[in-house]
Image 1 (cartoon, rainbow, N blue to C red):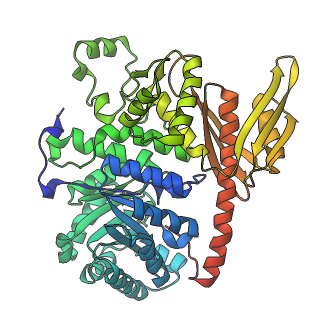
Image 2: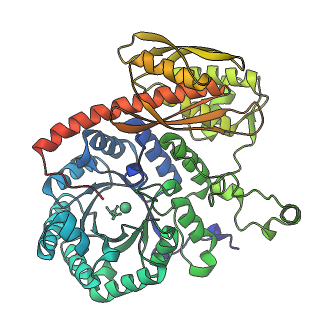
Length: 533
Ligand code: KIV
Ligand code: ZN
């Protein structure tokens, strides 16, 4: 085991972390982040110390464009990257969205595999070469920081991919990323592929080689790691490993693999690993993708020892059964921070320690919520505070808001719920419904109050901390207005958390529809639409 933070690694041994949570991660089914949520995640990624934030794919919708632009204007530190196909309209949109960032990057891609060229692009290898050349040249006319990806590279002819990469390098690409788009390659195959590319493209040694691996066969982290050993100095990854289908390389896993085994390879990243657990919770909360308890590095059991032998060993000497320290990844933040009688200043200080700057009206609301919870719970922990503040921050930006609800229920009667929802117009709408249980009755009443025929797809309850007085966090995924949307709610009362989560999911579905309508209008006037990566 190494204590790898003691010495900084030389520049050539620094692996850059390119975070694609907000682009590839956001392409996961059912994830519907609004601009405010994307900006909140981007600020946290900057605090985590990632090198590049891929903030979105601006041509795909006005909502995506707006989010990338907001992140470019508000988030300082990392490079802010916008994705673009090789079309001129994509590159123009990416540039317009990122140009206000102090460190803008355009990432342009086109497939080099024959499967994609013949069936998806329906074009020729020569055309792909021409497209790549023109796209990199155009991107370079806007910014000095240009990344090129030959999509589906690992299923493509390496010689042809090399030709296309050589063109991209000649046109000025500063990073060349080799995607395992469908998660098909194996570690030894990927190593051989990257080595061959280095042989075939002499210019590759003068730019940053990057890896982008999907997890369809569970190999995303292993493949990314072998890529780094083969010479890549940028890893594309996402918090909690979210992304298309089975997801991307998990950021927290590759970062801790590099940090923990620096003794083996001498490489490291600039990530502040103590922010990993909090970033993971934030992304899970905002996307509705929960983290399995046994998830490496950030799962709630990642440092729990069940067997007596293991517990005994760790009590005597932690390193007997632990290769990392929970404090190193920020999983120790459940210490009690506030007592029942704490005042507003104490709350403000505690929130600042947790990375939240809450002032004015927001602080008053957070304090009111804290007092309500402190009355019901014996101890208010950092995890509780984080959950309620995130919950409050979201409340203010929703289309619908839960005003109040009542439920009559018991084991001998059919539950009856009455709810009152504030509509986007500011009017309040009240409705009643019975149901199979109290939660079903509440959901039925909310649907009537807002006039929706939403269909519930997923309902999950998790306790934020331990004990019967714990805050409950509910995730709701539903299909409404032709799209999947998720919402979360937090409260010591599971029914209230459920109602809040449901109302939020409906809000997200509503905002998503507005985006899609506008997107269709833009698309008619812009480029022909081919599916994204
Ligand atoms: O998986 C993929 O190929 C991508 C590219 C855009 C890099 O996401
Ligand atoms: Zn991808």
